[in-house]
Length: 287
Image (cartoon, rainbow, N blue to C red; front, top):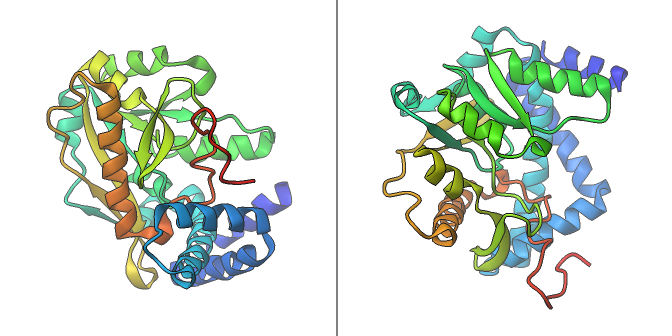
């Protein structure tokens, strides 16, 4: 692992266009040799985009593996390049909502696009709170923490700690950087449509917003064309959210994410088993 991390460190000296092309070449190889993840990706695309032909979905899957691998090697820039260089590559639209983030409790909703770490960098104009998954490998865990902490103060919360530290952080004025669009099982989740398929979806966004009065500001990071860097889009705070119905609030979140996925379909995290948890009696999609 230390050798691999050393090689990754060396990559941050490369110009971004070369680094991006190198990542895409690795991704093309990954698509060929990672049969299990390829099948998961194609299954997800078949479920979510049945209107597309098999060849079209296959092309999106190949593009996704290239985009995913590219995001991995480009993390070398996020982790080790001078901050001024990193920020030159980030195009923020329309602007970081710093005043809104400082004005009261704020949840930054960040869906699982491959460039999500860039969204985290763009948002770091004030201290934030974020969920953190400790890694088994000590060297890799230390590196991930370094990557999260190098852009300023951040309060990292593990999933085992539960929701209380998050509520405390919001009340302390720290925006919560939240990624709730994965399948974490049935606990604290509801089966809410995602591309028309019932998907076990955490209701935490609506529940936390209701408990704290936090505004929800979505943020999505995608690639700029021609290896120029990354685009980070901050959307207007949602109005009348979450309301009284947490299931409907969760449905609204999924619908928003669907719209963003259709804008950059190859950059969403398709290798995750988004529909792993099924309603009682339904067979698995991934067997």
